[in-house]
Length: 134
Image 1 (cartoon, rainbow, N blue to C red):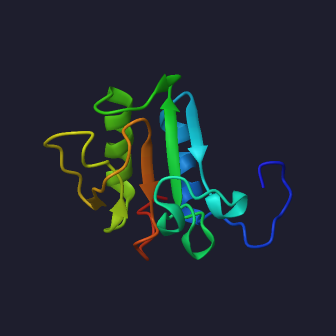
Image 2: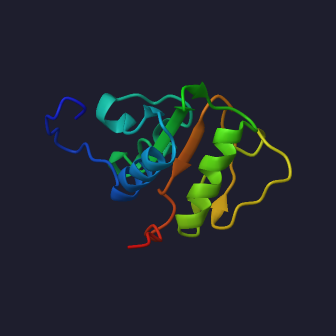
């Protein structure tokens, strides 16, 4: 897919692509480390239950860096990414790993457990669309 070649059964959810584009408008550099594990057969982390994998995959994105800085815990860029997501996300969007931060709450976002070396965002548990302003 990254080389521009279509692969049967390998797609990326439109909301994931839209949010990557929004992040690209807000930050000078955006590092993405994971999109669709179903295409590669990878079952890292949550395995076949991951939004990177289930139902054909492509419902999640892992941001590894913003503005050239690795993401983790309470970095200013990570918090800005979550604020951006919260401003457009439909209810049920999963993000903000629960063990990585304390006290913050983000409208529309559901926290979950995952490692703190990236920011996982997934739309695999919601049918809602991003609230994009035209």
